[in-house]
Length: 113
Image (cartoon, rainbow, N blue to C red):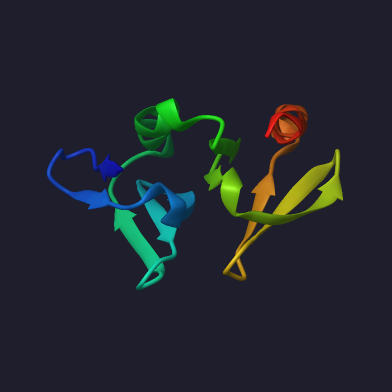
């Protein structure tokens, strides 16, 4: 899989199984991944643009918050309630929030997996 920044030149290639989550930060996104050398890559792009690039991988990659896209295959535990969920991911200490507006869709998605 490859994500391409808005300039069309900068890109990041990764195996889908290694992607943990994508997080928006102002005019950039941080792509968090695991693998031989776990870490994160910064791309100048909007989360909406990245979500369009990852659209074909839905529901495995799910936009759970205005600032996060999560790889549902990496979820180890779900905490919280309808007021807001927190996703604990495998192989990392990362916690990804699920916004209230996405909670129902997330529950439907999890039942379908």
